[in-house]
Amino acid sequence: MESPHGAAVSAEDFGLEGPRGRVFRNVTFSAEPGTLVAIEGPSGSGRTCLLLALTGRMRTTEGHAETGGLRLPKQAAAVRRIAALGPVPGVSELDPAFTVAEHLGERALLQGRYGASLRTLLRPRAERRAAAEARVDEALEAAGLDPAVLPKSGRTSVRDLERLEALRLSVALALIGKPRLLAVDDTDLKLPDAERDQAWALLRSVADAGTTVLAVCSKAPEDTQVVRTAPALAPTTDEETADAFAEAGRA
Image (cartoon, rainbow, N blue to C red; front, side, top):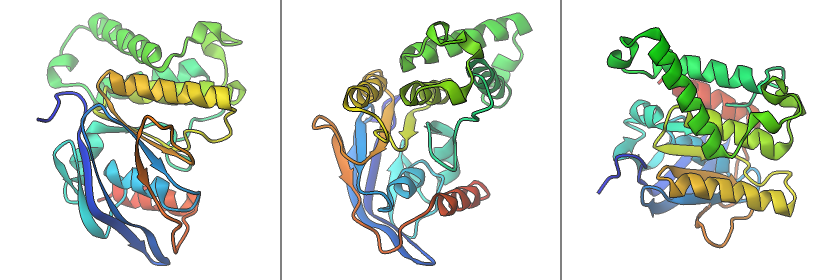
């Protein structure tokens, strides 16, 4: 039975072939709501493209998948409304010139303007502001990020964040919209062992709270459900991924 919060995710013979050849192929798996799923494989094996395809942001050419009961690629637009991206290079990166507070404020504003129901929009402004602040605080707590302990508190620039802090900020921004599915790329990239363990603990806690999590990595922890991608015939670049993401957004 589908959870009212987390989204079940499944795929059967899911694949993508582009102009230069196959990107990924024969992906078959099933994950219950609130599962932490690690997409494991070497760089260039189509990991990021699979992540984007399962969140409705890249159109595939083979097989099918379902996210939250919505069939892909046919219902990709509906999937995009329930799935949020954490950090994905070339697609949803943090702006290094922004401060932590600016990122949070912008996301809360966008959520309030485009993600709110008509009933919410009709509430008094002070009530809407308080609700937005509470949503940001809840997301920060879930991501384990306390701006007060940063070098310049909320005025700390993204360029001055450590890699793990930036990951926590990206996750917090995604959680502001209360998605049913969270997608994170390069989870273990450039992290020492201790911080890698903390990153996985973060994503595990998000999944334990009910949100399904898809996380790309080079090596998955033993206690996660693993989907593996093999070396592709046509390794993808960040530019190609961004182009395909933009194309999906117009679909």
